[in-house]
Image (cartoon, rainbow, N blue to C red; front, side):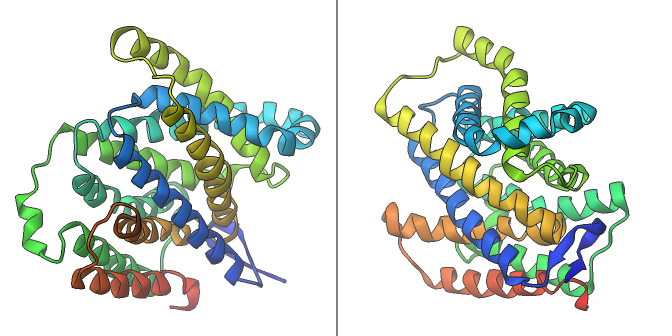
Length: 307
C-alpha cells in the first residue's frame, strides 16, 4: 500500500527506503565536492560535465537498453521534456556549478548552494501549487542554519565579511536550474525507469554541451589527458552521477522534490566530515552544533504531511 507524496508521487509504505537512498546519495555527492576542491582549476568546467555525462551514459546503457527500446515511442512523445532536462542537468546545472567554482570559494559556494531547498519549494509552488507543512518549513530553516554554522565556522557574523562575486551569482543561477530539474522529474512517465531517464538526459545534455566544450577547448583550456583526469571522470560519471544521482532521482519519485531537497543539507554536513577525514581539516565544536541542527532539520523535513 502506498501513500501519495507531493504532486501525486507515490510514497512507499516502507518509507525508510527513500530516505536511506537520500542519505547514501548525499554521502557520494559530497565526495564530488571534495574532489572538486582537490582538482580545482585542473579540468575546465564544460569538459568536466561533457565527459562526466559520456561516462554515465556508457555505464548505464547496458541496464537501460531494453527499457529504451521498449519505451522509444514514449521517449519520442516527450522529447521536449527530455531535451529541457538534459539542458538543465548538464550545461546549465552542473556546468555552471563548475564554472562558478573558478571564480568563487568553496565557502561562498556552500552558502549559496544551501538555498536550493528553498528554491525547490518556491518552484513546486509556482509550477504545481504544492504547499509544505509547518514542520517542513521549520526543518528547512533549522537545517539551513546548520549549514551556515559550518560555512561560517560557528561565527554567524563572519558571513558579513564574505566577498561575494560573479561566481556566486553564477552559482545561484546554477542551483536554480538544478532545483528545476528535480522538480520536473515528476513529469517523467512512470514507465521510464531511472536508468533510461539518466541515459536520455546525459545524451541530450552532451549534445547541448558539445559546442560549448569545443569553444572551451579551442579558446580557453583543453581537458588534460592524465591519470588524475581519467580517474575523476570515472568517479563522477559512475559513482556520483550513475549511482548517487540515480538514487536521488528515484527518491524524488517516491517522496517528491521538496522532501528530497534535504539531500543538500546532508551533503554539506558530509562534505565537512570528509574534509576532516581526507583533507586533514580540524573537527571543532561548531561541527557538532551544525550536525545537531542539520539532523534535527532533516528529521522535521521528513515528517511530510503529518504537520
